[in-house]
Image: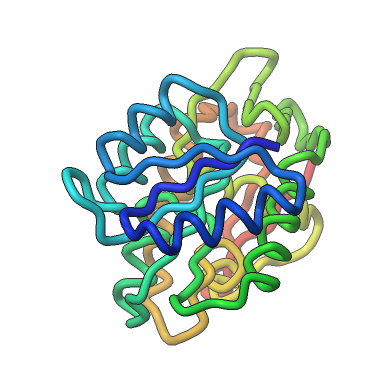
Length: 220
């Protein structure tokens, strides 16, 4: 597995590179955001460790730029920032995980392993005429590809994985958005409207129904 470390503090880079190489990973490094982004576009990586405060491009800017072209590669923020709003900002930018400095190396390794396990799932989800290939980040409707954003894809997958169950808005906010505090769940309806428009299903193919005042349920 090939990991890219984008970090401007040399001591942290050396510590992470030595430790992760001992764990058997191939490591590439970048000392600023611009270099990190360039490397991410020129080489295939299995995971990216991304500092928040970087020269030339911030971690948020790098993350957003990567997500415009790559929806799959896991990105973990390494940062001293830890307010709720900053956490949300990082997740909205497309990060998969967030670990606060200083951190336990053992915890970081376990989180990396979890993301690799998730990434390696070669599972096909189906919902009526909808087919979702998790490994290839691909959605097909009647065998035609549909382009979804990262968050739309995650939301659709969540509903399909819980097919036949009512998913409440609070459950979706916690499990898909990873937000565990009071939050305006109306944002889910905005994403659902966008998903429905993109899927462009016929009336008889209304596989995802709104449960008024509660949430959503997916059924064939």
